[in-house]
Image 1: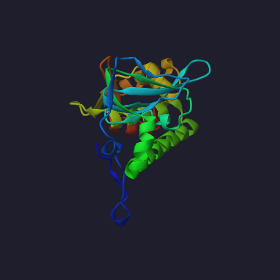
Image 2: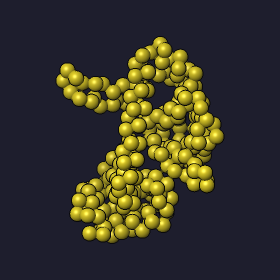
Image 3: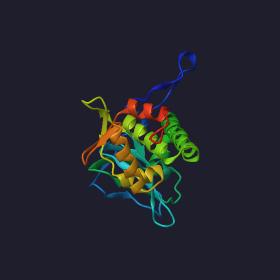
Image 4: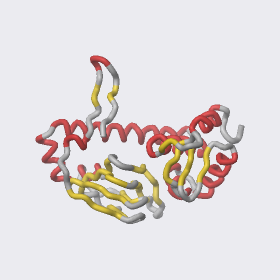
Length: 227
């Protein structure tokens, strides 16, 4: 997997691919809804998804889950293992998942010998920090409808494939999972998803969600569902 370059010309910065600097390692397999690692202790390895999709979430004091992100093939998770400190983090297989993983101690030793790996992991961490910063801004400034639309567009771009009807088709996330990502209740997500489907901005079934990106963006530019 290659990442795009940032900037151009003499100032071009190549975003390093961690996989290019990591050796082949152990492989694990997990069933749908199986926990890969759980809260109360930090993950002890850095993982890359070989097949399937994995959700990363945190648990609140009252037991609710907040979805931090969803990762798919060739994407890394478990980077908090490099800190070695306990975190209230949970990694769960959304479908049948295969991962390759490297012990945190081995990653530290490899990074000492391979500076490009250190740079790749730093770029990965900074990129995710920027993503989370954008989400914090969205939570601060936008209402639930716009946060939901932003989430659908982001997931469609990252996880979707072109559909025959002109939309982008992705995995059928449950309304519960989407609500945990957006920061609201399942009932409110269902209300807005139904309204967006009536506006022909998306379609969904038990098998998939189809997002019509242009229609969603146009709706938001026109003021949203309440306009």
